[in-house]
Length: 282
Length: 282
Image (tube, rainbow over all chains, first blue to last red; front, side):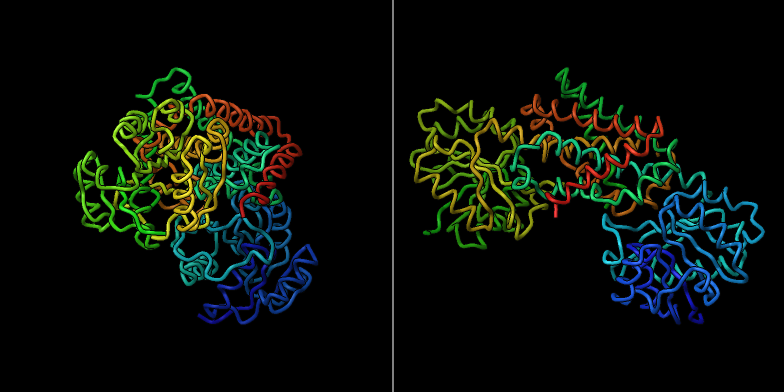
């Protein structure tokens, strides 16, 4: 495949890591960075995540592909404005929620140029300095409502993800938002809440600093995640997340009831059931 | 330090990993394994975690040091029986709860031979095949109520932990059980409950298998942990864990209320507060 001129809007963890992979795999003849934060734009250039930094309109004109990697609330405003400006370019987003954004551009005259995707990769860090080499490999990318995209755009985007080592899943936006509530968004809420639980109770103590083990670190690491990214995700996927959160609280209440009633047979059953996750998470 | 003849009772994840470190650091002239499960005993021998397998009484007679690495409910029964049998040997336990076991042997005539410890290391796996090389390094070990131990026993045990790369913390049993409820036990409950939440809702779906990302895996990995180890920990530390669990449910309810009322300013505050965990978990 011919390398393309690629603009990445939002050169942070996801946009920056994607830039590194696109260079690595020879898919980009040039990468132009666009970032609302001048510090991030400067840093991205220094770190060689992009060849140059430009204003949005200029970047669009000089590109074959435009990848949008910004918080999902900003996406809602920006995507239609970008589609207004494109001609034959391919536009891709990598947001963590899909239904609202797809509703937003459903009737746009250039809807076909846009491919809606969600690569299931990330870390708890953010900004250009969080970008890492070799990201995305061996993880899934969801492509939503692909029948609404032009064939050439869809093919190029699919090929891009395959080239950086991802496996493709096709899903409608409604299903995507339900499933990600379960296997991504709730994990962030439980981590944030666990961090707050410990910080609340251990205020006066240094013990936690010294005792915290790998198990705790693993369970709580997502609590470092950036509110600018996550508040908009929770807003846009509010109803699904509330369903999952209610279920999760009711599951925790079962553990609580077991302890209160000293019903250790049922406690063991709950744990044996939870162990079934072994089949899913290697 | 002169290598010693060491018996390890319970040659699983913890006992087996400790055996590997004791060999590696030249602290053991011989390691004898004792295990209630004959399959585990056989496997431990095959994997060279121990030199030989013996019955308890014989192992005690032939040892200078006896390390007990069995579930904490079994410990309550076994530790006093072992103290009945020792003469000058050093006895160490590595259990995750400390108050009940220390109460149990408080007035034992050979109490001094026993050193109560909790190395803050583990994984979600169990059994001799879960034993790994290089375990325990750069993590903390808590020594409880050390003034109740004989000086020679305490010194040897402290040196053993330093030699395998751990840093020592001194704590009374009551404080230990409170702190571990926060920084270890609750993480297991949230992981078990999260696994059950997802398994409950995604029963009919393959999506989770394909979508599950590193973030989810990290949050839920402790849900693979062995009920035979964890039910007794939850029993023995029931009151502290109930306190933490109540606090955790109330923290989750704050996230729920934010979503229900669409109070995104407060949601952001909750996340910003949770981000403070960065100072604790690198």
